[in-house]
Image 1 (cartoon, rainbow, N blue to C red):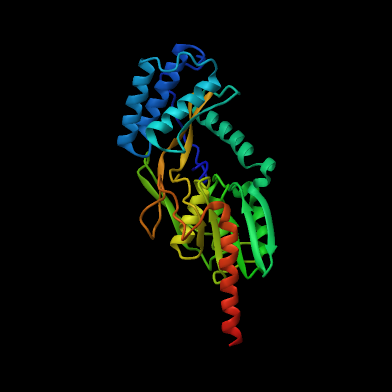
Image 2: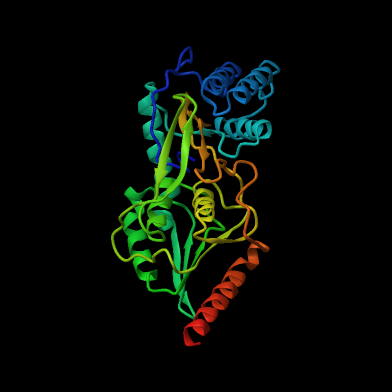
Length: 334
């Protein structure tokens, strides 16, 4: 997400025609929120034609009083999210509820909501995503990442972990339970696995009709694992967004072997957009474009080089790493 895939750029959204005080607890309040959601989809959703179709459908849903029996704002947001994802098949698209009243100014509201979400999903409570690192027999390093925190939160942990693992003869990075985060962390980590800056997936932004190119970090602090030793990435159906970008890009660069099951298929960076006093729309406004494949992984997921059930992915990666290291030792001794 831009929130889960790339560094978010909080843009101004004008809440035209939306009451600042209407609660979604009332039919009028719900229609006002849905009207704003439809307006945003129509104007900013990454796929313009799909955005218009989505807007038309949820307007019809609102007219048909699809949500009058829902008892709370929070349940209303969840129900609308289910409907939006059912229609769009886009895992980044959602209506989010905020217990705090959001500022009337869209830019201020979006920035404050985003900061709260960052702390909730990527903060100290999850150790900024760095759940485990260790070494297996045979000098094989292992790093388990559960989210990609913004570098402003977790860069020091990335430097520490990658420096400690740099002396490994092979490296396994476990992304099987990684739901994404900030793509800048992926580019920082990639800098430890590559020599020099390499182009990775850029982002096409629909509202501005611009393509922004992206590169791995050219310089990184601490010790580098380097570009020669083998790297294995573990993925599964819960691997999503920024974690998928990391796997997809290193696979396209032929820098890593991907092991496991196809990932979740979320390649549309999103922005938080104010949709009401207590609501923000997570709105995909861009698409990822890899410079090598010319494509992304939206809906299809990253396809593993070595398909195995994700529960067996670590065991398989260890087997592959040990076999490769043994072959290297035999060549060296022969």
